[in-house]
Length: 256
Image: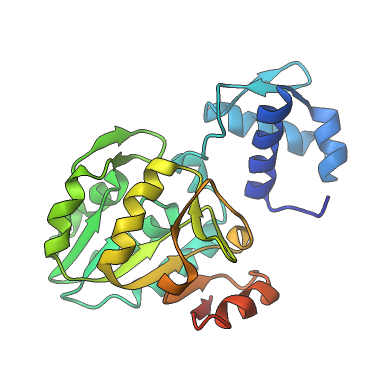
């Protein structure tokens, strides 16, 4: 198997646990070409997020289905890359704009750089972003109602989206589990995708914010087709061939 980024490896470990019902530290170490110490750290991190259960020499599933990595764990991945992407995303936002930020850790990195803006409206279903803006008096936060989703620290449900159709949303910033051709932007959560899909249609400009690990990956549910994406902001490690393929579809790609 080709060398994987940390998050990719942990997602693959989760898939194998769900498929086989059990994995061993030794087998995973041989498969991924990393030390048993590294695999134990992977399993421990996933166990601490309640994504699997540690056993002697391996792990078993925590429950049904393939859960997504929690916001807490995602914030610990590709930290420097997400910081640069966040800065580049924030640079596209002007005072007086109305923007959408989703529940991704990269969108949170954008929000952290918008606190000095004036007359800015942020539409979001992320409780973490709403909390981040409590000390930003020049920023108005608008949240659709919904049901609490603890994994992403967000509100889910589409019933509250109708009120947003009255707003002129200049830009929407969307993280994703993956960007691929032809699936477009995908999420591992169908509930999150159900919210993002109509919001993509409401935004005058759609900006995908993705680190290099997301290119070529396909999640459970698509929420934006390639022809709906205007800009992709990614990091310098993103695969050149995939960038060229996306640029060939008329999409601007910014690498930072």
